[in-house]
Amino acid sequence: MSAAPHVPVLIDEVLDALAIAPGEVHVDGTFGAGGYSSAMADAGARVFAFDRDPDAIAAAIRAILDDPPAQSAVREAALRFTWQANGDALLAHLQSIAASG
Image 1 (spheres, rainbow, N blue to C red):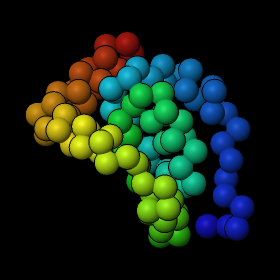
Image 2: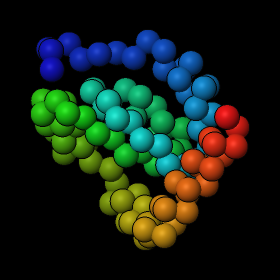
Image 3: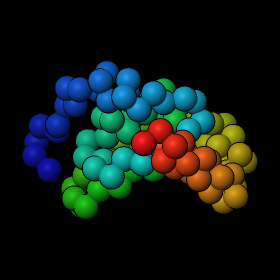
């Protein structure tokens, strides 16, 4: 990763296109510096972020460790999590995509 991380310039357009609703599950397969993932999470989505670049992964871990989420927020998210609910949300999301295409 370069010294100056990528700054997403189309963040508003991407968020408008995704039409994120709170509680939805989204996947960011090119996490990078985390700009899009952060924006999706700020819009209320649950975001699973991946990257192949070990420097990007290390930077993401450092950012979380430097500014960890509140324990109450982590606890609340953990209590809501079930594999069944996650699978159901993903299935519903994929079915809505398939139905609109």
